[in-house]
Image 1 (tube, helix red, strand yellow):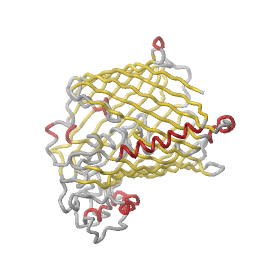
Image 2 (tube, helix red, strand yellow):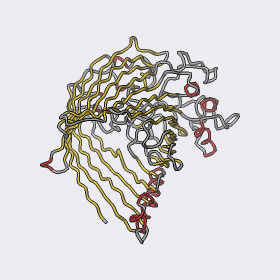
Image 3 (cartoon, one colour):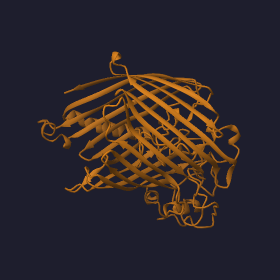
Image 4 (cartoon, rainbow, N blue to C red):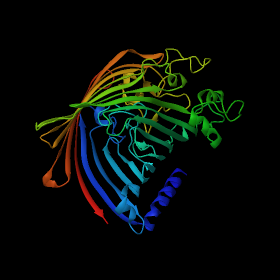
Length: 499
């Protein structure tokens, strides 16, 4: 049913091309690469926040190929293309395939979508790489609820193209969307849905020296069927999945369900589904020599977090971007400092007989109904510093029966990107974490962990549009098995356009 719906929607959008004159541009690429490591496990920063395409085990070889493009749709007279291209309809697409060979032989499709855009709005159908929230998307340790760590989830998404300005003075920008998606079937749960929405406001004109940000990102896994759940958590294995149940998911409030034979008391108290998200706050400041972005993502997992009972949990960061570079052979593009804490969780004790606004032990990303946790295809969807049991050392897997066995963490993260000789791009990351386990089921002691990365990319002019990348990453500490790894990739890109 999911595949039929997506295919039908894609065909309807694509048929609009035949009724219009078009101007288009396209890009194809092929990349070949490999990973080797001192240990069978791939180091953290070679695989984290890579949209689920880098295997956990090494050595491994990879072959990637993709195509992207956009088509400017005009009327038969070409009025939009000549006079107002910003008002034209634009159809974009992307498709990518990844084949990994090694201990894990897998064929993946990390991206396949069609996007129809008009003015400040867009409709996206399929699977697309995304990171949500006010954050430095290139250097971050991971946006709290949706980081780009897992394979993208297929969905239908409607919203703005970045920030859409309101009014003639454009002092208010709105970046918002709503989406419906389909979660993967697992041994625990089948046929469950994704609900996702985001609203971020930017206060300040586009060219102002200062901008303020405030917003909310909300996701929920809901519906589905599971033979593993008893009568406390599901009615004959079925969770609420009807259209009349959706308002409870959409607004995260108790709108119906009391004395409903289809709904358990657990569903009624928890507002149907596994709800996760974060409030976003930020300020961007442009000074004579640097630009600053300061942000905080306040995490929530239930009502107590929504009401800020779990402060100061969340991700805080400061991005520094020099605006004056001169002619130096070394050009610093950006520096990022971040701190993630998930230690409070609204208190240490969970009491099922107490309202969610009062009880604690929020147990981030875990859920008693959706026992795979906040994951997709065995990868954490949110920050990768909240870890799956299968990812850590065997000795560290014994603290709990939860699939996610470490969600009480403190992380300090520093990253930078630079350009050398105006052509070589360098990215470096160093992260230090203290890991405590899950509420009421801690590790025997706090586990310290260092993870680092240096990545270099340089064009090869003698091969045309070809980019060579090389990365070295290392893990040292008590959470993961110590490992040092190297990744190398060679990508060839071809551009072409038609009229």
